[in-house]
Length: 377
Image (tube, rainbow, N blue to C red; front, side, top):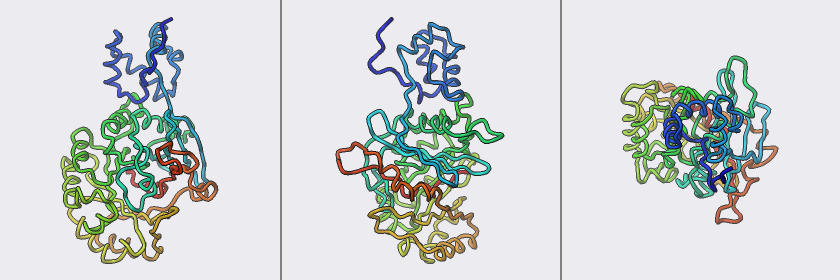
């Protein structure tokens, strides 16, 4: 028997066309890739020896050359409202978070794309940790694989996860190649078979990467706006200093210009008491977005330790919402899910060290995560 390679190829995050090329390099027929993709992603099988429609010789060869390596579940918490939160430990010891939100007509999984985040949004818990690294495609896909393996399948569905939103830790467009590979697998009928309208990429405004994304896919788009003018957004979302609102909205128009399934952009707006929640801010937002087909998600701030911001009163939230709806905007106020989980265990991800160069720093649960998941179609 030959000695396995020191770093076997992880097949979990490889899109089917690239896997077919790999099989051909190994002297195998490319269609074997379809068989393996179905085994891994549809049947949840990671043991090559169990892939019975492959020859015994090929199964042995795969065992020698490749692997299907998944993140490890470090913590799992289930809420009384059905929300499930995981802390996943990666092979290098870093940790990320993944959250599942069940609803009557869908099951939405919020996935992370980075360990930490470099964009330093002032109201975001994850941003306060700093940035560690990008996730690989297999670490992104591993989140949906594990969720489907752990969750019961509701009647009438083939699997628990029906929608995926890139709204967990990190800026997805800053990890472009892995993001696109993961999306390819999510949309592949031989893997997860999700429709484009059920996969949402959320960005804080990396304009060049957004244009690149529009060249390769037209999945749903959500934009973390959070302010109706550049002066305020420069403070809250520092990437705005490089790509101001005018450039960002132009990129949104380009992304939706071809009239695909998603002609509306979802704008996310975290409401911070006394900062961006006043009637004048609502009126500025109305003027800013009037010409863009969109819907607006209002997210009352979810406080985290050390944050200087405060959640606005529900009266202020409803007044802000009323101004937008009266102006003709589809506006949704997002409610927090899984409160009892947080109450029971504190900052869930904070129980796992991020193994960064900051010894005392721990990965904390993304402050917005429970309320942002409603941005799906």
